[in-house]
Length: 196
Image (tube, rainbow, N blue to C red; front, top):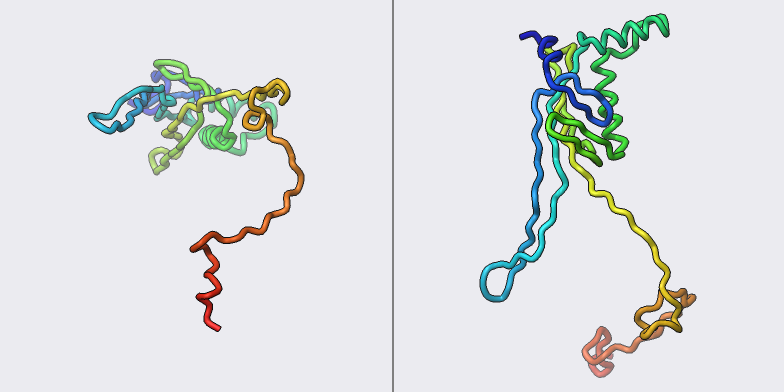
């Protein structure tokens, strides 16, 4: 089977809006973290668990012989009067690197499900004499858990039961350090130990 046949028959997906021409392999990892705590007597106890971020590894490819590459070359020829400076697969690889460098969460569509808030943690590609016009990459992606924070204003000191411990931190100005006296056995030896 020729590589072009394989590209046209393979299921498609996308990585951050970049359409995948051929998906060679997809690997999904969804795991649950169970916490363990030692106790004085007996086995460790478990009192909590949480879902770890999803991980996706996609081995996928693009070809300079694909319809998208040919349409892009013809469009560039008519609009700019010349062929594009980069070939199609080099352009796709540059887009993937830019997506990784941006560190902005994106969506991934696979044959099984859609993932949101993903980042590319690793991107690897190999080119040899047989794959000069083809880009095959392995993209390892991991979900980032997004949280939002908010600030709140504490009630005034007069409305607090124990304002010394619960009131907001205040600027007390510049505080001068106090001279300390060492305790017995401290850093300064007693004067009767000193040799004249």
